[in-house]
Length: 218
Ligand SMILES: O=P(O)(O)OC[C@H]1O[C@H](OP(=O)(O)OP(=O)(O)O)[C@H](O)[C@@H]1O
Ligand SMILES: O=c1cc[nH]c(=O)[nH]1
Ligand SMILES: [Mg+2]
Image 1 (spheres, rainbow, N blue to C red):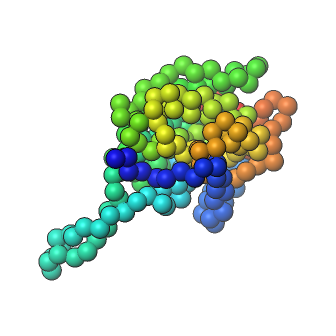
Image 2 (cartoon, rainbow, N blue to C red):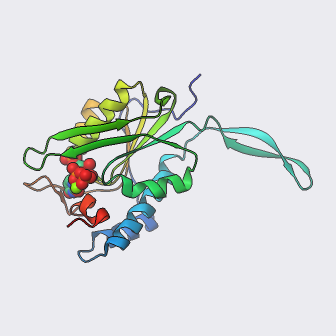
Image 3 (cartoon, rainbow, N blue to C red):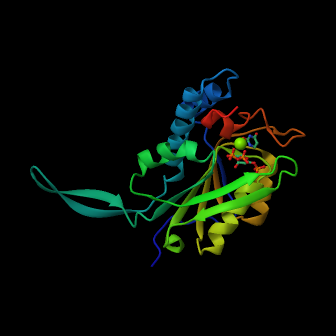
């Protein structure tokens, strides 16, 4: 029997208004931020989004042996999670997510957005062999047009994965709509639903090019 998180029939969008998340998001938006600080904050917000996205994991009761004998305790039932970073920028959130779920399997997906057409180009896929039994937490700092997230979800579903949650630092309404229409069963956790996209497909105000900021490539 699959024991995981039960997904609602329609896509739910969770904008996490927690003060720590909003404070860190403000810092991430600063124009002059070092690669080191951007990387650190991306990981921290990734961790806080994970905390929210796992708040309905199913618990089971058990007895723990303590210093004074048996005592009632609870543990997560199943523990079947795979984290799915979308290369490259998704790697920036991975440490933070694994900090809270250290034993999760990691399924890596490579997708980049063609700079001219804005269309997603899938180039890598290495998924947990039992992904059909796992809840997937897809991580990517940016949901812009939604093309990259859609390409990733398509890969996961093709491999038999039925429980998918997307964790992004910032989301554009255009991308949310696209994912919502194609995959209403996928829930989204984000620090901010931003204003929208500019003519180059960048999120406004967004974070700029997250991949370049995490890896220091521009
Ligand atoms: O919603 P979309 O319009 O598809 O855009 C979002 C994608 O763009 C960025 O990746 P990018 O293509 O820059 O690749 P990188 O992470 O390797 O820099 C970002 O990390 C998302 O994956
Ligand atoms: O605003 C955006 C859009 C796509 N990719 C980014 O890194 N930033
Ligand atoms: Mg990039």
